[in-house]
Amino acid sequence: MSNYHAIINMINHAQAFLLGNQWQIDELRHSNIRSLRFKNCDIMENFVIIKRKREILSSAAEIFLDILKKEYEFM
Image 1 (cartoon, rainbow, N blue to C red):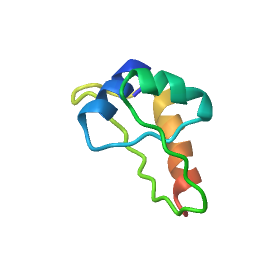
Image 2: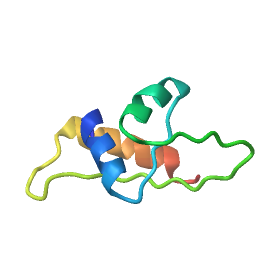
Image 3: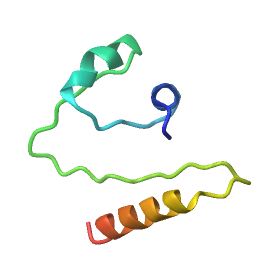
């Protein structure tokens, strides 16, 4: 998702979490999202791609996804 407000809405209505920076804490608090700090914790992350059913990705988007897949392939 590229729309920050859509991401915040999804976080509020799903069993999901967002890994972010400290600068987001106050902004997320206004959206009733609690922030926690993790120390020495192994976190398993899933990268989720959401796209419209009948929409074809641009060549730039395909290249971007290929780069992401290669970078995270062995993690």
